[in-house]
Amino acid sequence: MPFCILHFAFCIIMITPGRILDACCAALDLDGVAAVQLFHAPSLLAAAASLAGQGGPESEVRSWAETQGIGAYAPPPAPFPLLPTAPAIIWGIGTDAPPGRLYELLLWRYPADHQLTLLALDESDAATHITQITLADLATFTIHHSPFTIHLPALPIRADLRGPEGLHWVVARLLAPGGCPWDVRQTHQALRGALLEEAHEVLEALDAGDTHGLSEELGDLLISIFAHSEMARQAGSFSIADVFGQVAGKLIRRHPHVFGGAAVDGEAQVHQSWEQIKAAELAEKGRSRPSALDGVPPALPALAAAQKLGKKAARTGFAWPDAASAWAKLREELGELEEAVDSGDATHTAEELGDLLFITARLASYLGVDAEAALREANAKFRRRFTHIEQGRNLSDLSLEEMIALWREAKQEC
Image (cartoon, rainbow, N blue to C red; front, side):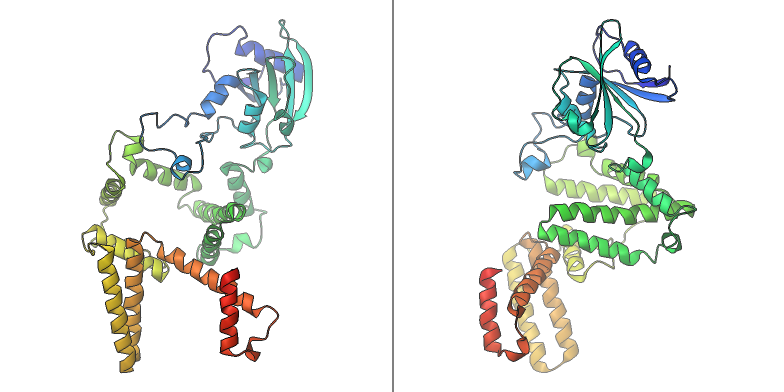
């Protein structure tokens, strides 16, 4: 009999896990297998839905889907209870654990064409029916012999592509001996451009509302994260495990109202607690941020940086009392820009234009608008409308009045 990993979370039943394992080993000739995972199907499904009741009926914080008005909350299987690269036996599939629900769970990590073996066992633990199907077939499988058992063969690591371990293996293989000659010549600095490009392509998909594209671009961004981590591991600095550990630990520490016993009263207190915990973390590392404005990356786009700097200053109380005051300041800066232009002083004009742009970013915060995203959308809108008036035309042959007329037409259509 192979060594087995047993998962117990069920009541007393007539068939024992040991008898199930012995029957499957006999029917499927598994004696040469080093390790087998053994799961009771109803308990497996219950464990996979463990996040469903975390908030409880008394919680004022609903899920993201409910808060956004999208629909009812469906919990993800986190953590995923099976190890796909090891074989598994799941028994007790029937009324309490329908095949369709099991299909939905397994599809998170297994490909739809993964081959399964179905077994129905009689009272003497002999297999009376053995059927080969794919995981996709399980979605609509009709139960004739209830309950029944399935055997999931292990996924080869190169086929375990629906989880972080698979991507980790792929990237590590590219940077390993016998890997890709281009990849092994890269450095952290050489990949900076790719990281920036992928981040902007994620933003492009978000701005376009392209969920399929967003899925793809987030994957491309993960390539950079795993590549930098594997290069750092080989250099003896850190590994992807350190990256996961640091970010997961940070999120838990900074949300004591979710993972601990702390209570918060609204979003403002969440932000305050977050900043206090960040300051304590820096102090533990022997570091500090002397200025309230520290922590804004220098490489951040200027408009986004302006809004972030303004928000940080506002948390200290350095802010206008309301949006009306911000509007007044915007008008004041516009007047100063006009005066600078009239003076003919190019340096002063550039300075006043910068002030106007900065105040515009501040006003965006009062209006609840992401200034950087708003400008990206304005850029995209201009591109759509301008390319519309270009279609089939040589713009150099058109007068300004004709182009303006076409622009008005474009505004109606795009």
